[in-house]
Length: 290
Image (cartoon, rainbow, N blue to C red; front, side):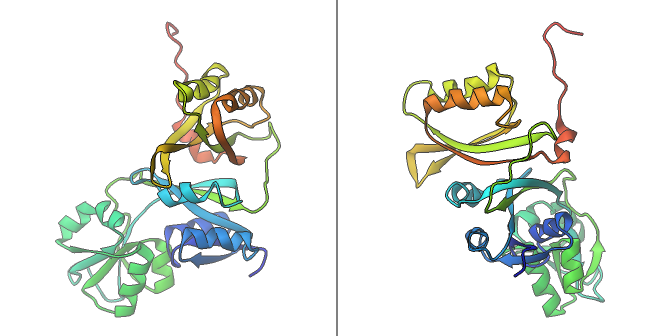
């Protein structure tokens, strides 16, 4: 592999592969079987970066990634938001009249219910969408179809019978870009996101006090999620995204305050905020204001 290599989890034609091509069009994108394989490949120097799906606006977070990231030794150096569009794909010569089944990951089938009902198709669960497209292409069976990406259609030589057949147009997946070395952007050049995980002390109101500093210092926390550690009910880790750079005075004070109530804290990355975030900023409403 060359220095311009990026790895992703999944098969060629997956949405992770699509994201690699979108963000790094001149790079070699290599698929891995698991997220852990992606992390290890970057750690071992087999690739410069990894494109990792972190969460989906409909399906929620990708649980494995939250568990693997803190101990991976990798840093988040960027993010990318990909609108997810499903194409109805079939072998050359097939039509909407010839197809009887459609194959996709269970989430893909669940997000394309309308077209399944309209065409009276039988949904068949596959391990992933790109794999379903590959299997349908290899079969050459004009009764089989798949829900997958434009890239999958291109790679496997499938016809697109219907475009953008997803039920919800706002379906979006957020990816993070990981590197072995930290690449903290210069403060003040562009909006930044700071991501970290933490575990609070087992004392009353510890979480409340940990988060209070972000409110009093005017720091916007865009995400806070909890997950259990190693199957233990009373060992809870929190994942957080906040707007700002750690060198910003407000965020610096907030992070300093939270450490008093944390038994663990790991900074996962400081990186440029993707422009997609601008679509969801809300105007600040001042009580009693006009």
